[in-house]
Every structure is written in C-alpha cells, then in structure tokens.
Image 1 (cartoon, rainbow, N blue to C red):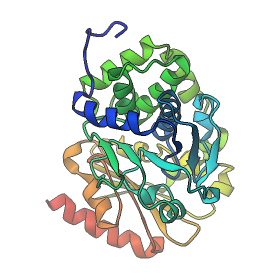
Image 2 (cartoon, one colour):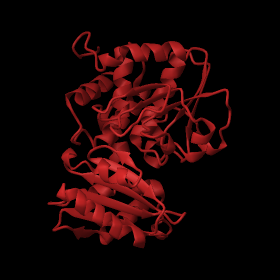
Image 3 (tube, rainbow, N blue to C red):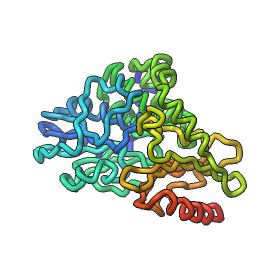
Image 4 (cartoon, rainbow, N blue to C red):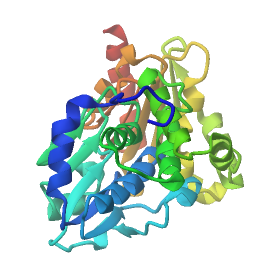
Length: 335
C-alpha cells in the first residue's frame, strides 16, 4: 500500500457494507450531496465520492450543494461542477450524502424531494442513520479519512488530484492533525494520501496563505465582540447583521473564526453566534477537550456534531437567545 504495512486495512468492519454499495451503484444515476455552507471536509468528500461512483460504474454523477464552493477549496474540486440543491428535482437520481449528520443539513428542499437517500457516508457521532445504506464511523477524524480508507481497503486507484482533495478534507477537519479526535489512523491515512501524490507544502500554501482582506476585517470584528463568562471558562463572539457587507466579506469567511475564541487560555467552551437573514441565530460550539461534549449543548437547540465541535440554528433573535444559551451552558458546566 505504497509504503504502509502490507495488507493493512483502515476500516475492515465496513468491508461487507462497502461491497454492497459497490455492487448497487453500477449503472445508476447519483447526486452526491454535502451539507450547507460546506467546509473542506465536505467539499473534498463530495469530490472523492463523485470520482468513486464513476469508478464503480455509475452511469451519471452530479454534485449538489445549497451553497457555493468556498474560495479556499475551488482549486481542489477536480473539475466537478456543483449544482444547487434548490434547482435539482430529477427523480431518476439516487442521493448519496457525505459529511451530513442529518438530512436537514443538506437543505430543507432536498429533504422534501428525496426523503430517503440511497447512502450516507459520515463521521459525526450525532448521526442517526437516515439512508438505506449507512457507513458511519465516529472514530474517523473526518469523512475524508473514512472515504480515503475505504478506497484504499477496496484497492480503488486514484491520482494526485483526488488524493489532494481527500488530504484537504482531512487537514481542515483536524486543523492540520491537531484536534482531539486525531488518532494514529488519521496520520496513516495522511501518509497514504501523500504517497498517492498529495503535496503537503503546496496544499498548505493554498489553504493557509491566501487569506482575503475581507476575512481579516471580519476577524477583527469578531475579536472585538468576544465576551468572557463563567470565570473565563466560556468565550462568546458575535457576527451581527450587516457585518459581511461592512467588512466586504462573505458567510464562507466565518469558517474557523470560533477557534480564536477557543484558543484563549482557560476557555473550555467557545461559541460563535451569527445573526441570520430570517431573524434566527446560527451557533458554532468548540471545546479544547472532547469531555466537554458540546454536542449536547447543540442538541438542546436541535443541532448536533462532535464532542468537541458542534452547531445549531434557532428561530430566535440574538437578544432573546443569548441569555437562554448562557443558562444552558451554565447547567452543562455543572454536569
């Protein structure tokens, strides 16, 4: 396996399920769907899944997302064109979701049109299987890690372009292999992808040394909003209405801002709250340690995610929601 231990299997327990998936897709038409406001793991996984489906004999494959591919990841789409979920209604296609803990994360419109997807590939602990075939591994640090491992286990060949897309997926969801869910297998998968042509130095430049000026101004606004609670154990930052227009940025530029709040010494739970156009609030939660289980806080508001990274949307104004969130976090800290 190109430098790794011969015959090593990354995800042996899914051998049967993956074989079933491989046999079922031959000759079919599939739409690969990721979650709204996609991150690097979502885009990399969509691109890799589209390639995999074609390799397995699918007759036609498209990628769908409610939101555009973010600026940072456009060089890693391997020529895939992404269609909008709201415009897609071809019922001759089956749906394959990647990196989506809940079908609602694809978009309300798609969930109504295709209520039972053909397959789901994911790594979120909060995923309650909703497809006919589910390959879900919470121990995987990224959906890209899961897909790379499954393809390696099955002997699926791919080149440096797909290796790079999967490497991006892995790096972005683990913050460069530093998050608490990064285990030995994640490093082994990264090594495997490098052996397949992913260039860590080049990818690093493209991901971390091309910041837009508007994002820097957005970051400045977020940092100015930070407020400490519960003796410095909780830090909350805000993105108020109009901030994107004020800074010349876009929604995709908010990705990763919450990490700056988490990075403060003594902070155990970090929160980013964003005003939404419909009057609601989008929340992103992070913690330094998985033991904090911020996914439980998110679940209280109908969201979910990982033990150390989760999110939610609520139909409340920021002023109404902020004190309620503080109360829930306070109770959570006591537990």
